[in-house]
Length: 49
Image (cartoon, rainbow, N blue to C red):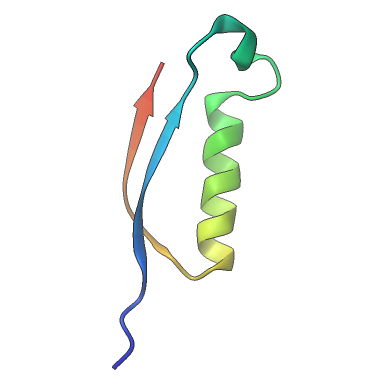
């Protein structure tokens, strides 16, 4: 039996400059899209500002 891969999502920005064009929402969307494409189950999400 093949188990589905699982992952956690961690998004963050460390400087104010990083928020321009690389927002937390953009990071999350990209990661969720990748997980869906690779058939990876997201277990939990963490965010650090």
